[in-house]
Image 1 (cartoon, rainbow, N blue to C red):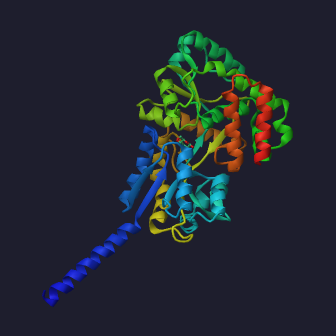
Image 2 (cartoon, rainbow, N blue to C red; image 1 turned 135 degrees about the vertical axis):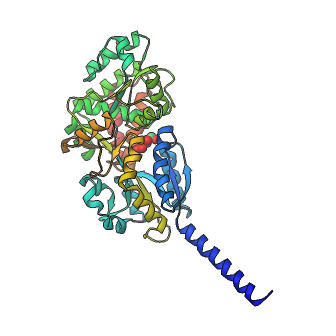
Image 3 (cartoon, rainbow, N blue to C red; image 1 turned 30 degrees about the horizontal axis):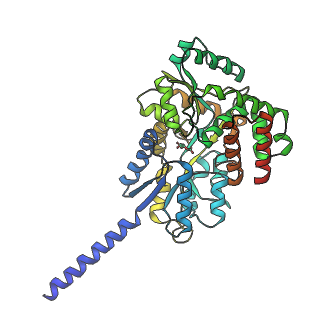
Length: 414
Ligand code: BGC
């Protein structure tokens, strides 16, 4: 081979190696649990933007939040982390940071002034030791009641505003041959319904105090007894096929009118939208019955595994940038059913339910945090879900026994 062509070959090899390196630097594996139709459509908007900016997205969907989070953590511990993984901001993400498992994206957050663009509660919960450990993408509310309007018309009842009204309406819906509550029988879904009852019966100050203090007297209080009694009264309004049902199947029951309501986070709205229904039309949304207005928030975010120390890789930094871009926040959230985490993006094109969420959150007194991932340590969160599910699924446990089991589970875990 002539000297000249050897040089050319080496040069060609080097340039391929360099571009492969550059390509690799822009590649991120994204591990998430957004597997439903609405969720995939929404995530597709982030992916599209990331790819348009030169990123390569390796998709790792894992059905079920619990499974996906366990997989993300196991892979970090096993030394084969996914670069980017879905989580929620709050106490449980900080537990991962505490173990040194996360990269921080504070530099990009500082350059892009996230502190000025996100609400203070989100700024605080997305940081560990004063530095951003996640890119928040939305605000979801968990205390929604989605309802089929025709079902209510058929039964001749109005949409209930209190739990006693709900019981009366549910009986009439049942008499009209409609399943009153479409419930996905999984612990986290049962807890979402329970927390709506807790908020409705106890009020927002009680909810906030109970979960921020985990105080024994509050757990043992008469108010808590009433919460368990009210929750138990919902049992006859759920159909037999509830156990194990996925949340999006329950949403579908409401869209079709087989069930009248679903108590669920507004990701249910993502399914409604994906089914071609404009939220607020045939499927209505209101906050679950309650004496005062409040919003139980959960904030979806993507966190970044420490790949090589705590500095993010170029692909991780690009992802953090993309997730906070105004266009992405709008396109993603319109499909997801949530509202943007950023306060400064225009929200006038959002649907009627999102407008209600935005209006509600203008009053800071409405701000409550979910016990899923946001507001309590993981051990407490697990104890809450398990004991509620145990109570819900035990035919012969009294409200008093359910309350006592809940109190004990929380006091052991805290
Ligand atoms: C997340 C939502 C998601 C839902 C169901 C929640 O934990 O915050 O974004 O749609 O799980 O998958």
